[in-house]
Length: 296
Image (tube, rainbow, N blue to C red; front, side, top):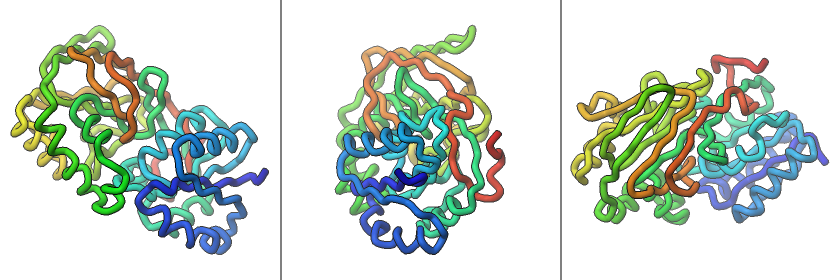
């Protein structure tokens, strides 16, 4: 088996356009590897698991945030280093890692060989690369089809949000972290191990290298409140809303009444209650010059 394997998720919005370019790009940058296109989630997981198990030194993964979330289940705490090709709709994790959406630039970063070890989040038994959502945001992610994302990009989430926003009801939230307790009503919660939710930092302090989760919630319960929150998120002002609640913590337990759906980096991951915790420096990844933390 090659020391380097590239697995490309063909369901990601930018993957088919990139696939034809990759052999030439890899060759020009001195990367000898096997390129494996995959068309379904099970095969993606199987090929990533196989590469890590067989001791691949570099695993290049092409896809969006959901693809990265699937790969993290096998890359967490592994010796294999991830090369990220951002080919999805949102690519929030790539933004956190300062990896540009241009495929050649991403390949150049991998070829450069500079690595870092960064944090992952974990909810119950599932790792996530960037963020997990509970409630309305999780339902929107679950109900946004791949073909809509391929056609409209990030706008697809706004289009798909109309039905869930009208149907979804506020719920009671109970948070427990350390010796602290907090209870409120809400429509959604975001728990981030990385920095970006969409194209804005989820909180000003959010970081992928600080050993903490960033938790964001607001107590707005009407559809107007939710629309106001998303408008604020679009310009990075959500933490300034009067009903915003944010904390930074290494672990937190979240209970809701009634139970709410959980999504990790856009993919379904069960229902509340949920135990979140940070996995410090759990992922090895190629990063550009200027990324703040080099590998140990």
